[in-house]
Length: 454
Image (cartoon, rainbow, N blue to C red; front, side):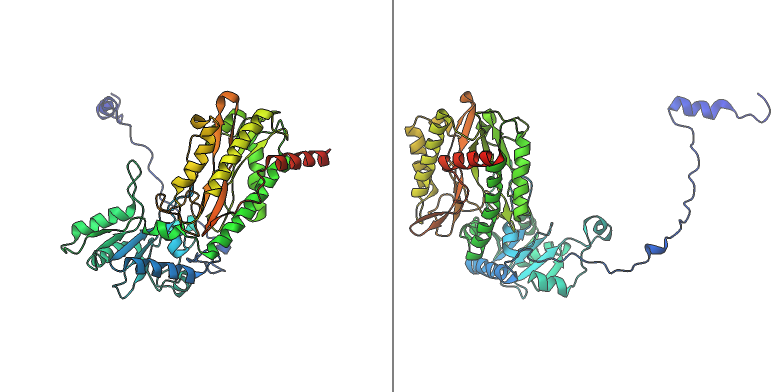
């Protein structure tokens, strides 16, 4: 070994053990220069929390009071579990507050000095850089805009729930949810409070569907918003008649419809639009919209806008070439007749089963029982498939769809016609009548548009 050379033993041991030789020493960070415009010149704008639409805080305050009056005793927790992908879900919290703040919760306890308390996520300054500034608490701005005098951070909720549990128990007012759907967060919070409470009065009171039944009957101001959402939807379907032609891609038609919704003033889609042509029209929730539409085919367009989170749900079946074939027209007329029978059967006091029987009888009598694959009707409101009691007699003020369909993949097409109706004491009003469904009218309009284009 030469003088001054390193003994190979330690290095050889490192290699044999699989360890890497020591890397370069990390540099000590240096202070970087500060730009002259880093100094603040404007005040941050905290995101307000309160009703985002035109109904106003008083509407939500009255709803909260009405719920507590129905329950009479016990504390009630409502967690914001709203989901906006696809079919919107979980709008109970919004119904009672008009607030769409993620991670928020509402505790109603008429036995407490503060009968309504709003709980918000913890303040995170770094997260604010990504999602927007949020106000510190207490905040008179948040209290006045939300209409709720007491606002706290969510970490105080478990203790508050433990105390409230002794005030007549905990009311579960949501819907029953079967596996494998995740358990509602409210039930998890209730179970934890009961486990930690020594009080025998800390029980769970089964009040399920209380909010669903409240939401089923639409208030006059809600109906106004729904009528506005239908105007947006009618604008979109009018665009179909204007632009539909052979050679067009499904996604092109979808984009034209959705653009018309937005130009009319709809901020969001009510749900993910469905545009299925030819055999794709026999796929109920066809998702791809990538096919080229051909002469002589049908296209099913299930698409709608919304207004301030109030949804519409409309489906029409259009002839791509501007005219239904005799076979297509025969099926279309059966579906239209079935829908008319369901609407005629609708009034306050009957059940959805009554409408279903009326619709199905027409389709069964025509010989297409096996080609009708779904139910006739569902409630519409803050959610496209809105909450309500599907077994109880219909109340005046409920809004629901009537949507029969016949699906014939072996013939290369499907037909679905869907409208919304408002239940009245003596019948039903078709809210979506401005969207054409009469086949002669559709053909006339499409051919007229094409003549103008030439």
